[in-house]
Image (cartoon, rainbow over all chains, first blue to last red; front, side):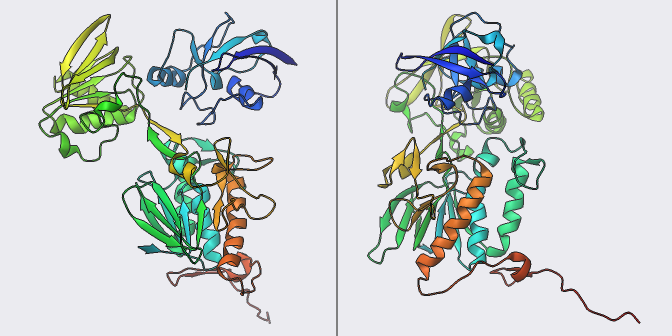
Length: 104
Length: 350
């Protein structure tokens, strides 16, 4: 089952992506699969913040883990709605999710 | 000048395993890495994380994988230039290469294998106006010699292990240490957090959380740092500002070596030997790219193996060589050590 999500890249271009919910993928991986400029340096361990994004829609996201909180506290350009893409699991509850990639 | 058969740039798992495969072919290796210890990302970023996709290792900690690789390559006595970044490469008239580091150490070999992973780890710099202007004039991202800060006023920013550890060290040396972090929680070893708590309780350090550095000031040398906390900004008189926000990888100097680069990685010939567009320079592991590339340690091991076979042919075009199995020929270390399978004995049972 795929869901549709919207990602605005760092140039302001909007991308509509089909994200599978049955492959244990997270948002960082979906962006990489579509070759969006998300580095995912640490491979998804909430240790680098290269997948930081701003969540623009009001979807019920899982609470931030301690690791994510800690990483975001050290990252730059962090806003209220900042999340690490690698910590957002693709789930059918996220149909219509809209995010913007944070600056590098 | 350090002379060897293969200069390996990057001492992560792929670079380390290349030493082993080269050793089987009696080729000597020397590794260069910008980090002060071998292991690359595995040692620097996630030594305590388990890896599950190393063949025959259902689970191994990244740090243990590095330790085991070091044991495995020990018979082949690799050389190391650590804490230095490979800066320049010069092709010699005979087709060999000289690689020079940022500290001027020179290495000479007929073959260069770049196993640079994601690149050189560089300090992450906070987003502060005129920050670069104060570099080496009061702003340091890396502490090399604590004595530099003796009897000085130091302000450290960050919430991880290095911010905690250096606060502890410099509290003994500096005239004053101020630790600034965006929140009250710190991510570090329990022992370090407790030590910093004690220093704070004894008023041996100034502790500012949740707070952020927002401006830097001074004349020829940095002399003040503005810290914003709970809506008000206060200027602190300091000699040094040390932001410790971790490391981020950048492809670095190798991006300017004339190699074909695609998507921040070095293009190689994957149908043959992982050679780059410059004959004699190979790229293996996460640093390379080719159709179908997967950034996995196990793929790096494979690439290292094929690279060594090609390097051998380049070094000794006249020599005939065949693949040998370690089960048959064992391991003949350059240190004179020898490992081999136990010979079966044939004995009559009467």
